[in-house]
Length: 110
Image 1 (spheres, rainbow, N blue to C red):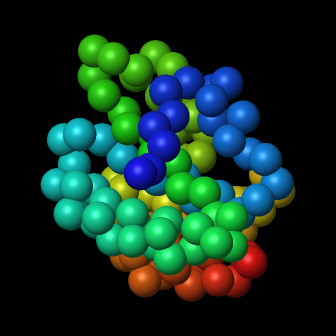
Image 2: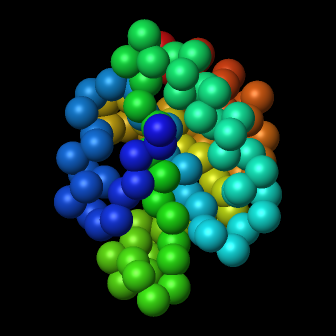
């Protein structure tokens, strides 16, 4: 499934040169929960191309101290927000549950 990122070390370690999608999310975010199965489908679809998808799930009482700075640096204002990276560089971002746009960014980054 989609790997959960709980701190900066895990986030940094996930940047390994391949195409990566980071899903900024929260358990209280309805649209996040609705779009997640579609994002999991993208992961399956692009697995052979080496695309990795990770989720930063901002959870009060659990990981806010660790994840909030990453959300702030990325200027995440709405959830979900998706970032597509290649070799650690941001290729694009999508705000909202727009999985087709995420797919286009992945294809463009490959």
